Image (tube, rainbow, N blue to C red):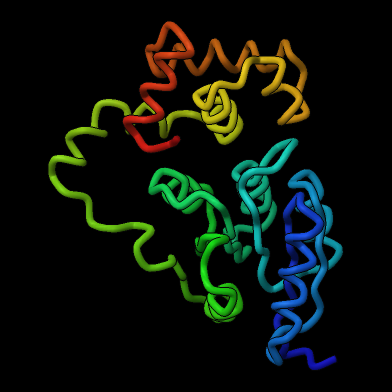
Length: 215
């Protein structure tokens, strides 16, 4: 195999999505070996074994999730090149992914060719944010979100995942099942999140999430 070709590690919990990504990327003559895994927990171990040039990472996965996986990969290798490929196109997700250490962000509803182009650009050392994902905020929009934006950024990657699910109406049992964590752990996270955001109820969290366009 041509060693100049880009090696890619795909991290996504949906087998059909991974199969589609592999087919698309493999059709490009500059893409080399592709390995896929279904959990963020496996990312560091597989990164050590496979040594990919680019990691393509989903955000919404059971277990530790994409944001925490990005953080762990960056801790292991500060030079890791990660491209987020997510269904979420809200600014807060893009910003948190970049803050965690990702070098690029595109949406899953993008044209298929965008993924391959983004992988190529990231591999060359450039950043790639899909146009329109980080638009200039109007002054009124900034004022509307200013109250809670700082507090949301104090949430850890795992706290942010719990916050997002609770804000969408999940109860603690459902959040625990979705994230593969214990009920008690979710309750502890819920308390920490409410303290950080100065919220009393799940409805308060939902209002904050809507104001900051998390949901």
